[in-house]
Length: 359
Image 1 (tube, one colour):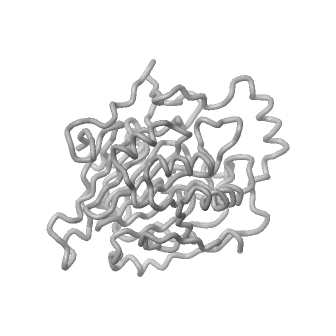
Image 2: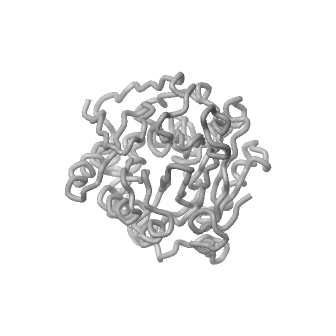
Image 3: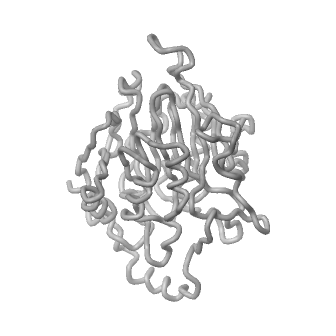
């Protein structure tokens, strides 16, 4: 059951619930999804710039050794980036799978739409036991029906809860997830999570309880032209006994990051989107520069960039987001974690750059 959060464990709300107007959810600040009167301009760009973001050669393959997950991380925080916004997060005994998209395309249909640059490094059948599937919003590159339908039947996921913003639970129920397994969160709500390593030898009793709180993001939702903003979108603050992390989902630049940092930071790790930005939609995606500013506002120590290098969703070259971020980071005194896709990476407090995209 969700409860109000302030510091993730108080009865006083740090954020009010999302406001609505005419049945549609609103951002905390006025937000334009796309600039009006630019339809013809956008169509022209689709014809002339559509393939700019595609790699010029095959990427990968990448592989995850599932045997790694037989033991808990000795550092208490380990992250496996599966591509885009799909991560397997292990924090203080809890395992959380974020925005899982294992399909070949992020699209309404299987025969058209953005294709993956590389296959998922780990098959769904090879997943270790999962405590929660965390969903940030209902766009196709974050909520994949085929993946959800397969996840709900897997033994490794049979005890997992599905945590999502308000309204997204309807999609999950339509795809066969039992209502009892779904927890919907409004901004300012949180829910406890009991990890599978709670009874590991040497662990303190109840030390695997994590708290997951939904906080504002600046974005939009909808899986069709007629369903825009009927479900909520969210970022998440995730706190365990020893670690505190932030999963940003999708968001444009927002003053809420500073409030989140003041209320729930500092964070050992922030996971923030850096790709799919464009001058035609500057308020719903951040890009590298605004993501760096968000990380600083959140009072993050390490930053792991997500939402890049997996699908062509904009008009920039596929490597550009990480190239711009790595050039900017030293000037902002930002420590980055840039693991190879599929490699379980212990978060020790030190920066990491594998430069995998240069291969």
